[in-house]
Amino acid sequence: MTAAAIEARGLGKDFGSIRALDHLDLEVREGEFFGFLGPNGAGKTTTVHLLATLLRPTRGAARVAGYDVVRDDLQTRRSIGLVFQETTLDRDLTVEENLRFAARLWNLPGRVAAPRIAELLGQFGLLERRRDRVRALAGGMRRALDIARGMLHEPRVLFLDEPTAGLDPRARRSLWELLQRLRAASGLTVFLTTHYVEEAEPCDRVAVLDRGRLAALGTPAELKRAAGVQSLEDVFLARTGHPLAEPSAA
Image 1 (cartoon, one colour):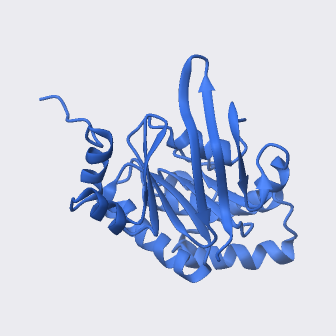
Image 2 (cartoon, rainbow, N blue to C red; image 1 turned 180 degrees about the vertical axis):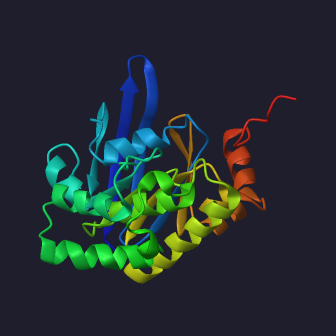
């Protein structure tokens, strides 16, 4: 049986009187491409921040890469890569300088960092732009660099929190194809949050989150079959009683 890369039991988080996450039970297998699907405000980012040790849970417990996220917070952080919704790159540094700076933060010796940086620049299509300042890059390339930096120390689990938010459709497709290739090549466990059903469709399994609660969990095919519908968007509607995206005002 495949081991669990992520385990959550009764995990919850309150912000004052607001319950952002309500008793989440979840298990993500090693090497799985796991999708966390829900609208903005559903609790997706809160979940990622709890699993990545950036927040302490109000209740429940979680383990990532075998480590308790509260008791073993430092070991957990060393085992994960994290890509935030908003880029945290230094725009005045070059592509390569950003990766070298990250290598120093991870205490990677030069003999390890140099070939790893070269490998990632090639994988992410950034080799020819390595001396360009980040501010000169298009949005899709900046996100590719964000993800490359998240993979620099060879984490066991990579958290991607809405990685294509703000990108145009073409850049989104290119980035998604890149992620699929990298995941297939590395066997890395990927935990992806998204509100785009087309990004959740290729995932091994998908958790549907609504208003801090787990509404459904399974493979995309299982979820659609159980709900008797043709799309994950319709699964969300069937499970929650409201659409994934609120209709825009006329």
